Length: 147
Image (cartoon, rainbow, N blue to C red):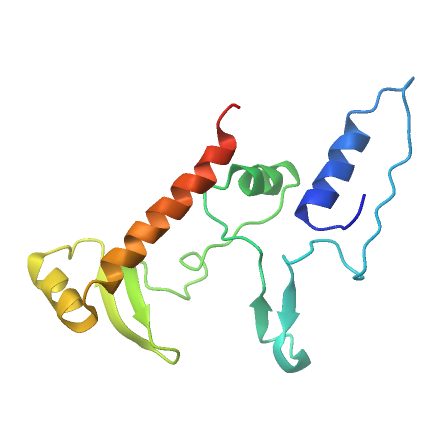
């Protein structure tokens, strides 16, 4: 296998796990880095373990069946931003300006007033972003359809 990213590591794992006792072969992975995971890795900013940054290759969401199933299969702990207390449980939408949230909206505040404030300040950008996200997720979900 070339690479120990998600594709190479999972291919090696499944090739090894589907071998039978009479049909054995060796699986060798060639990886340029000293860790498994490819682009999905965590680095410490300024080598400070108190400032980890996830470089992740994917967003960990429930619709990513491969990632969710792998986490369950290997009994990996899953923490969300909400479960860690780093995000307010009521906030579901936020606009980040690079330093702080300049707009947040809660579950129960999909009122016309909040939408008017959002469109007044940001124009059609939130709507375009939402449509792009839906299109991207739709393309992503096609991966799980039968050929």
